[in-house]
Length: 242
Image 1: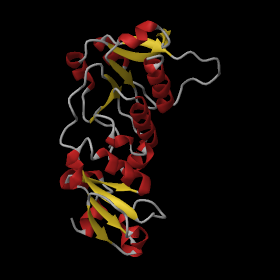
Image 2: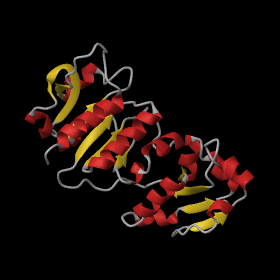
Image 3: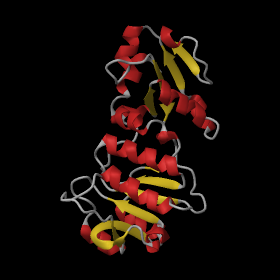
Image 4: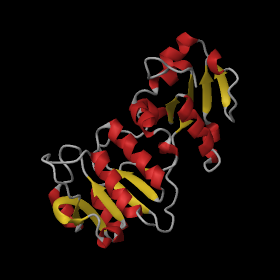
């Protein structure tokens, strides 16, 4: 891939048409290299480095750039001098026994999605499903916020909310009037729904899906929790004492 095409990978339409995305920075490249052991298709990635990383050891084909060229490719203002061009996955791996799903409906904030992926990767045993209209998980801001978790969480995009009824036997969602997430019943579902930062999940859809309502009890005066914080608390409850 030439440098002009790599620059285009900052935009979703070119990531889709060229079939690749960018991974920038030492930590993320290290996580990419770790992921190769379980995802050999990632060996098709290509590494781009400046003189600061001229002696970097990796399994990837490596290209050397000057600082000006790296600055043109990088999304950050002060690039470290190392990035990789990574092929988009063809499909998510098949679900494993006992795996649970976290469904995000029209999540918009790259930082929220990256943080959710970090949480799911930390606990393990979760799949992340994104609705149409959600932020692109291969957006450079999401990739950075995920801190490499993107490589370790089964991820599916463009999953319609209505399709969950055919795929999962039991669904749960958050609601101020629901049962506590600390209850044993909360752990019994297959898929957990979380909504858009401002609008949540449409109530008529939740009713149609018969999603069981649960709540995170608080004592403060604010009306709602940050999306990523809510997912963090719920996944902790699901994995607690297991």
